[in-house]
Amino acid sequence: GENVEQHPSTLSVQEGDSAVIKCTYSDSASNYFPWYKQELGKRPQLIIDIRSNVGEKKDQRIAVTLNKTAKHFSLHITETQPEDSAVYFCAASIPSVSSYDKVIFGPGTSLSVIP
Amino acid sequence: GAVVSQHPSWVICKSGTSVKIECRSLDFQATTMFWYRQFPKQSLMLMATSNEGSKATYEQGVEKDKFLINHASLTLSTLTVTSAHPEDSSFYICSARPSGRTDTQYFGPGTRLTVL
Image 1: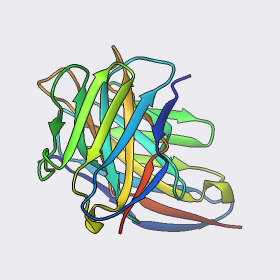
Image 2: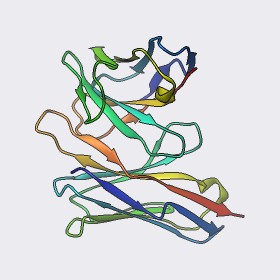
Image 3: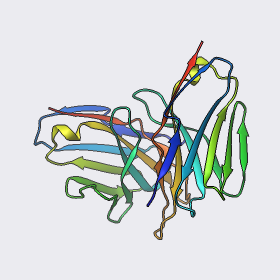
Image 4: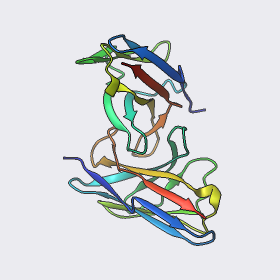
């Protein structure tokens, strides 16, 4: 079935260190992998995404890697700052025979950056 | 650009009543909108996908007669929680996909529903 797993569920790092969150997906047809940051009580915000035709994408302190063969993708945050503290969700698209694709979310990682 | 609004932002209702939540794309047309539910400290769970002018597609385990979805225009989708019970208390978030796009979606700010 459709499933996205995410590890770890909680992560604490010292300010300035790197944080890595890993996800796996089950549907080999998935071709779009967004990452969202959600602060308490607020909407998820897209921070980076990657499509299946590339293996890595970087945007300043954030990078994402994708291994389609292994069905793994990861989020890397370098030089972490206290304002990076939030819950991070990975997600994967599930292609449909209809005209739309839906997106399934992983269970989330609560990141705490300690000053 | 790409702003999605939801109304109301929070609502408290009595058990047995119905509640309607609106999701609007303010500066783009959205053929497809999605409705998610999020319980405290949990992930977003997709409830249903609505396409303008057609019936919504519900995820397994979501009762279509309890969660009525109407996507009557390219900028508005509504979710009605019928005969609400305390276990329906949750954070309901919609997202809208710009017409012509196959993956991008923009999220609304969410609606906090509390059923007494």
